[in-house]
Length: 247
Image 1 (cartoon, rainbow, N blue to C red):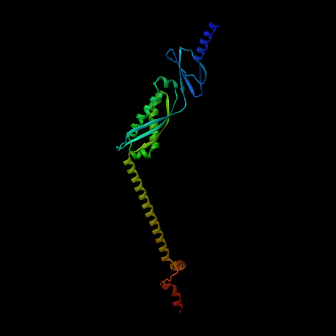
Image 2 (cartoon, one colour):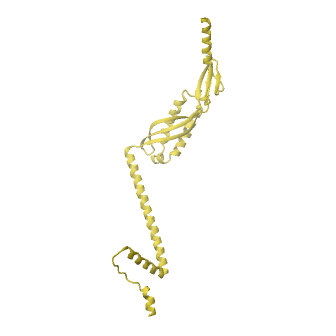
Image 3 (tube, helix red, strand yellow):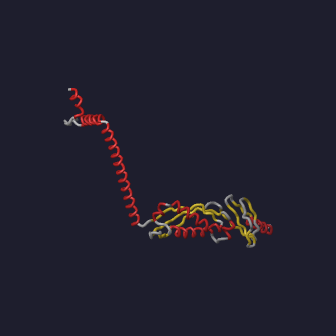
């Protein structure tokens, strides 16, 4: 019985090493005697010839990689720290294994160096106001560099820009000055519009004397309702002109 148990155990262990189960999002890169098999193995139950074949499992799902904060000196000589996040996935499993030793580490290093290189060519104001444009430029540059590795970079997003304290105060003062400027412009525009309307009203009243008299009587009515004290107003001669002419 013992003599049968040993071969059975060895056979089970051999089959266990030969059988591979791949999920839908996984592919298997196989090296047979050191040579790459043409096509990677798809999802499902797969068999390899162990130990002749060496099996490497690759995930095709999108990977989210956090790029650590990088020291960047902008074009206008401002020292800042910038971190980002990069989204990428393996499109060609064979290239991801053969062309680069560790595609995760290589993509991370490429993202860090590209982040410092591109952001060092722009000014601080552009970095803060044109993030979408810079994200697209970073994505295009990193994707072009990782394409020979079979890696597709789908998006790069700048997460946080850490400014020096004195730069933060300067930006706050600039923003406050901008708000004051806008408030003054809005006030000046309001006064201009009010003056324009008053000029139009004066022009209409000068053409229609009766309108001026009606406005005069309206003002008297408003004062009478709002004030309890006695107020004396000179009566315009136009109001009694009709009586004088009739007399």
